Length: 134
Image 1 (cartoon, rainbow, N blue to C red):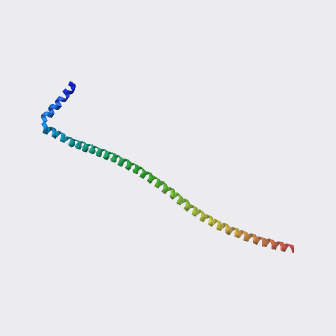
Image 2: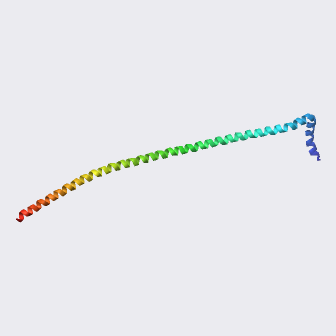
Image 3: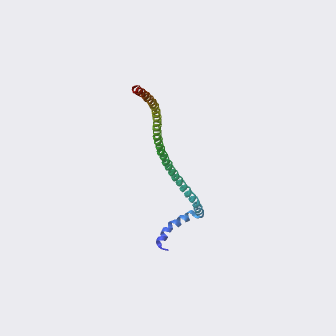
């Protein structure tokens, strides 16, 4: 072995000798406890990271739902306004049809009266023509 390596290992060996056999055995027995502690610490860190990601996901989901809710309300308002326009058009068309029906009845009465007047005029003209021809 090289002298530098020996110089580096010498304090470690002196520490092991100072501990003695029971200290070395306790040190070896502590290794699984350290591994378990390290695993618990890593699990804790992972749990905190998952909680942080989950909170970010909840926040994003809430924002998306809020945006969709606002858009839904806008669409519903627009649809309601357009539906009201259609209802108004329908009501106006019904009134227009009723007005046309009244005008058609009035025109029918006018045509019937004009036809009767022309028939009467024809009768009068024919009788005048007969009277003049005699």
